[in-house]
Structure formats: C-alpha cells, structure tokens
Image (cartoon, rainbow, N blue to C red; front, side, top):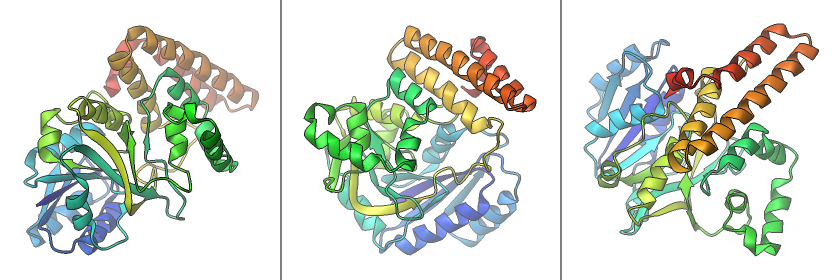
Length: 329
C-alpha cells in the first residue's frame, strides 16, 4: 500500500485538486490519502470530513491549532498503513498515469528518499534538489540571487559554465544549477530533495524519527534528508516521472508586510545552522538579518511607507531576542 500524506491549511480547492490527480495517477496499487489539517477556517473541515465518510481510503485529521509543516506530516505518518510513504504538498498535481508503478520501482535497497522531477504550471523546471545549505546559502537566499537569476534568464548560462568548471559541480551552487542542465541524468544524487514531494519507505521515515518538528516551516526537508543519508542511504531526484508544483500556492498573496511563512523561514534557517554548524554560525546569520531588515526598514522610510518600515524594523529587533524566535520553533 502507498500512503499519501497531505498537509492542508486553508487550501481546500488545491487539496481537492491534488486528491483527484492522485486518484487518476494510480494504476493498480492499493493506496490511502491522509489529510492533516492545520486548523483551517476556510470550510475545509466540513468538506473533507464528508469526503472521508464517502471514501474508504481517505483519512482526515483536524488539528485544533497550526502545528507547522513538519509536525503535521509526522501526525499523518503515524497513522499511515502503507509500506511506501509519499509526503506531497496540496499545491501539486500528478499529470501522468502510473505514479504507483514509479514509486514501487524507484525505491531500491540503497535509496532512502526519492523526489520526481518538478515543474511549474507553465512547464518551467523547478529546482528540486541541492547541496547542504550553509550560512552563505541563506544570505544568498535573503538577497534573492536565485530568484533574480531565473527572472533574468541567467540560470542556463550559469549551468553551462559549470560544465567548464568541474570543481563547481559538487558545491552547493553547482548542485543547484544541476537542476537546470538540459542534459541532466535521469537519476541524480543530491544531498537533499524538496518537501513538495518526498517518497520513501515508512520504515526509513520511522528510523530517523520523522521530521524535526522544531521547524515550523522550511528547511525541515533538508534536515530529514541529512539524517536519512547518515543511515548510508542515497537521496535522489528521479526524472522518469514529473509532477507539477505551484510553489507557494498555499500561501496568501504577497504583501508588503512580512507574512508568517516568510518570518518562519528565517527562524528555521537559524535553527538549521545551530544544529549542524554550531551556535556561532547561527549568531552570525542572526546579526546579518538584523542588518538586512534594518536596511529594508530605512528603504521603506525613504519611500514614505512608514507601516512597512515599522514592520521591517520590528522584525530586525526580533533577532536580538532569541526567546521570541522560538515562537516558530
């Protein structure tokens, strides 16, 4: 049996579409779909409780508060009955038949976690694996270098350059650019793969204790993959199957003010660095965030947007008080 776990938070339409795509993609393998609802208020509870009563293979768990992504997945995995565990986001669609055959064929004895190829709704490649993050990764992320490289069409140029600079291939940057290479192998080994769709045996997930639920959102997928790799198992992207992921589809429309997800990302980065590189690295990043968001606040003051300036200054001050950051951990 395959157990699909979907964490829902005020995204009933997306989750419904994901369920239908799972139904269409299965050829013959028994499967169940487990929805863990992080205290949605959009009518999800009524809809999915009714659907669970109609179907024999759908389990719906409503949580009385928002546990965050990792803990909610752990709750779903605890009740999963399948040998195979597929943790999949609600803003994904499986467009092709035979996903169950792909799942059973990709998990070899030496493989711990597999992700399929992932594309955006327009068919553009979505980075789905990478090298272990460092403090520089998170600084580049804050500066949005990857986003602007994709926006300006520079990624393909950079990825071609890696072919002429082999020493870059196994670096964090090289592995990121490897997602976009036209001649990427059908199966590639990475340090971690995206939590938008992670496939593994339930026994492996249990052996490592599931996600570290100290992360509210973000980086928990990389953390999990690190612990699976410590078992001597490979982390792979298998491009023989492709899914569609509308990245950020479960979040509200962008606002000038920082949302919960944006704030949680930065706190998760701090936790990750402290856990794998030590407190000094985490505190250096913390100092960078104080500076970066203070500069952002000044920028909004210059633009005569005082409410946004206060938002950035307030967030910068948060990093000076570690106890406050634990609200997301």
